[in-house]
Image (cartoon, rainbow, N blue to C red; front, side):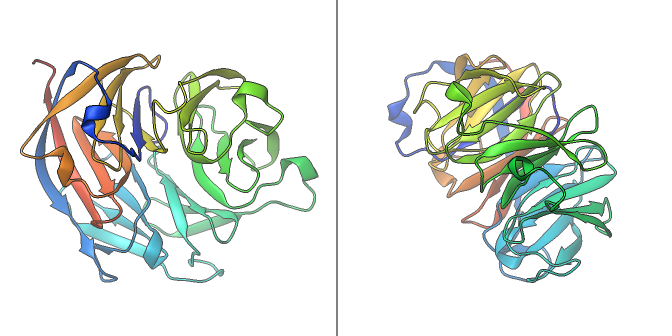
Length: 308
């Protein structure tokens, strides 16, 4: 789910595990299975970039290279898909992110078409949202990188073209933007992924590699130290108010909700070096799903316990 109380930071790390000297985190994950493979058939992926889970445990994948969205159940079965390259209804041009957290709707950031698409939970088309000429020029968006819902039903678009976040009301009309170039410390350079919690909005910023935190109104709160999260990417939630960070090098770090680093979790049945290019993650009832772009797979882990 994109709207959660806790966070996972997923980043693309340039260095090795030896670049970090954090203590061992008191968290453990056990590897269970991997689903998917490279290709364009059912249950196959091509350079997938986005992942989310609904309250029932169904997974939704932005199968970016195949220009489609896939739905999987919690047992690893591909249930449905929609898409194909194009700009018409039920077509996409590089879908990069999905939001399925309310259990009813599936919102898709259709990057190349510069729009947000809305489907129901069974992937039936409902509506399309693009910037309107009637909107104030300063509140139009292009090339959405992510999309999410607040607890109040507001729609948030991570605007890749203008490098900011745009907040819209429940009717789809723009309310305000934040993270713009004139936002001081809260300015975004290359926003990649967004996570909405009950009290905060978190943005991964790749150019000035850091995580930027805002309150629910869009007021800047803090930024992690530049370089502490190299090339940050997808985010999702864990239990117990913890933060888990994973990088393309395969390294994971655990953080507290306020950004304090706790350390690396233990993995059982899997090596950090086995990751090829993880780009997004989702968490549901003790299960952690990692989407690996290069291996075209979803990797499933179970959070077993918090003991050493």
